[in-house]
Image (cartoon, rainbow, N blue to C red; front, side, top):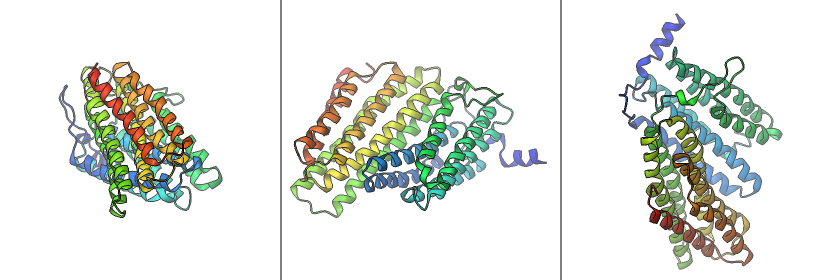
Length: 393
């Protein structure tokens, strides 16, 4: 009876039906799901803006790691799941609701709404893995998702424990994040069952790459939203306008490096690569997470600079201005390394120069426009230098 009910609720027809060389198309349901992450990224950037301390940065990074993993695993699931099937739409809607609850809990995630954030995260992980294991029942992927369900249950204990014990919360949540991120690299190993090789996963990498491009656009959109909202309420005097122009051009450079340099690299890698799961794990799940995190911190840095363009640069502003582009370029370098087994030297030079320039602006008591202009010049140099070498050089 139970098997009959499961078969009716989650039929095998909910899987995408594709030809051997066909890549899944991105559906409206997937784009609709992403709308929650527009709000979520806004919440994350405001959390960091409100807590510009070392502990605030660690807390924000932990929250981002959880948010990114919920989006990442859902994007992987829709590589096989048909989001336009009735049961697929139901799952995506429920996951969307959980993601919205997580976003609502972010401002007080280390306070009164810790339980809200943790329960929504754990529910999202278990529902998604449980659904996919039933959808793939009788197949190797069903076993893979069942093992992922077990890993999610273990990490979920740390998430819930962190919500219950405030004094140990950050430590328990960091351990939970480490467990979640380590699971794929260990093949979801379980005692007596062993691990499962991700090389056996029938992944269509181009679909997943397109999904990652869309979430990166959302991250850049947060920079535009913060900048625009700030300018609406400010007097547009020359210092503010010049700082805003610098910030806007920095956003353009991030877009340029990603979509002019990395997009072609990624498409080439997935078109010619045979192990799409390996490429997607390192190049998308991990590298893109670092790039999206960097883009969010860039938005925070632009907000800080434009809000006080004539003030001497303070350490938190300098750190944000250096960390955002540095993380973005570090993720881009990992993406290059994954797709072509080489990393552009200009990325490494920029990663060294960015914190050096940020430190110099603090030491010389320069204002925020100097800080932003230096970051802009370094990012422009990376964009021009790599373009000169060709996208696939």
